[in-house]
Image (cartoon, rainbow, N blue to C red; front, side, top):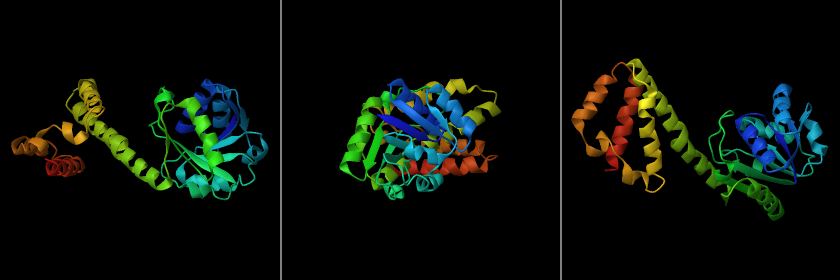
Length: 253
């Protein structure tokens, strides 16, 4: 099976390296910046492509479009004549954005990716969808080379999954940043709080989040809540977030 990739960002980079690791032949890589395509292609023994139209006849079986969500339609429009399966990797974009192609699908890895952070791709959930049975079968074959966790997820379900991922990943990471800044302002090292972060994540591997909620809000400890709010008076945005989240936690008591 031969694969080509459009994109050179975080997801494209991890996918390309993971595919290369399991000996999938990567035919070509195209990016808006040719230098970026060239850099990634050199790491996975692929050809860096200058003109996106070249992919249409490059002999690959599957084309993975891994670009910003608002660029997927434009990229797909330039690849109407591609003979294989065209699949995007987005969590928030519907399958039908690719419907001008004959065979198309979604190959969505549910994970947070950073270019220079290595991860075990065999544990990454891969959420698949396709416009026909044969295309889905081929995407499953490719996915099985990469991961033990493969799911058929339709476009509506994937929207909810992506939204849930924002709540579970992006928002907590922002809050980690708030915690780091608070600590730094008082000459405290972020390392101090990392075991707490790790234990919080570990708890929900074996229990529902609502079952392991801790802190002053769930205890309705008004004195502590007021003290915290006083400490946040100089940071109105953080104070607003603190009050909102505390009230929501109280409602779950």
